[in-house]
Image (tube, rainbow, N blue to C red; front, side):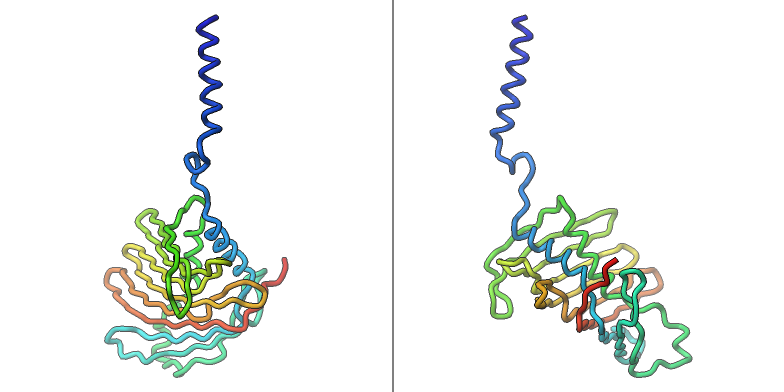
Length: 227
C-alpha cells in the first residue's frame, strides 16, 4: 500500500511540475509577427493579376534577343486564372518556335515560398533592418527535404507583417537552381502582392546547361471568384 501511495504521489508531482514548465520549453511559441506574415501570405492567395508583362533572355551564347511577353486574364478554370498572349516582341521565328520549350513560370517558383510558412518551421528574426529608406523586420527561413532546398529572406512591415521584399533561393539537384528577388506593395484591400519579380534560372540537367534571366511584372490585381 505504501509503495502504491508513493507511485501515485510521484505521478501527481510530475503532472504538477509539467504545468509549471514555461510553454516555450514544451512547444516553441510562434512569433506574433511571423503569424501576421503567414496570414498575409494566405490573404494574397485570394487575388490574381489581370495583366502580366514578362521579359526574358538566355544568359549564354545562344544569341537569343530579349523577349517581351504580355498576357491578359481571359477566364477561369474553377478558381484558377487562365491567361492569353496579347503581345510577343520580337515575333518568334517560326523555324525556332517548334523548338521552344514551355517558358519558365515565375509564379510557380514564387509559390514555393509557401512551404517555408508551414506550421512547425521557425524562422530567424532580425529587427531594425534598413531598406529603401524604411526600417523592416527580416525573417530568414529555410527548409531542406530529399535533397531539395528552399530558402528565403523576407523583409516585412514590423506592424502588419506585410511583405516588402523577398529574396528566394531554390536548389533542385540535377534539375535547376533559381534565385528570385521580389518587391511587394500593399493594396487598399489590405493584401500585399508582388509588383516586380526578377529571377535567374540555371538548368542543371546533364547535357542541357541553360541560364536565363526573367523579369516578371504583374498588375491590376483582382479577387478570385467565389466557388
